[in-house]
Image 1 (cartoon, rainbow, N blue to C red):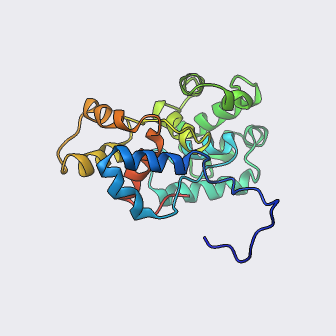
Image 2 (image 1 turned 120 degrees about the vertical axis):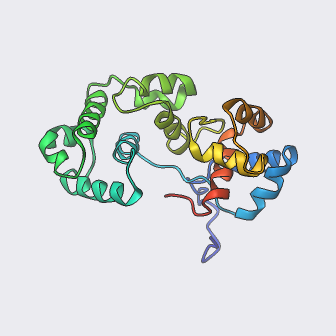
Image 3 (image 1 turned 90 degrees about the vertical axis):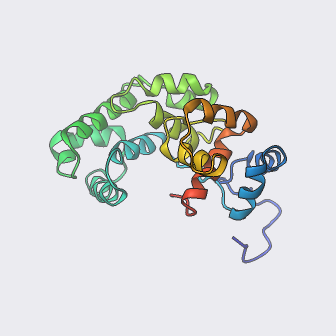
Length: 219
């Protein structure tokens, strides 16, 4: 996006552009012939991070196994019930009010368990930035309703980790199939073999494969 005027010398860089993004693009295009063709197609588009950890995880639980439209509708109702989406606010709302937002009984239980983990400090959100990927995943999967895939999406979209390979993600597997195997079925070992060339920027390569399937990134 072009600036409307010359920024002052003290203006900090945009916070939503991962610091490693440009370096990763250059290295991936040098190493990988598919990335060399794919990356330039998306110009200045880049991964945009999501903010608060609790909100990010709550939204991912709300969105599980439903359409984007249904997830958005439930999330908007949840925002009316809990405008700040804090653990304390969610716990205070309680199961009945959360269910009234259109959440299933199971998702209501998951959201309350998530809130309880945060409120009781059974997860160390303030330390995640300094923990390695697997240590963060190990904490997250102890919360009901959060599996490895959700934890990996959190690493990508909240912590902006550069080297995540979400092998359980259908979009990644489909992107590898279409771009590297002419649409043929792809196994997890095929995906690992292709991704070896992307280290240490597997998140960035994954993001561009998602864009090859859906050019407009989800905010």
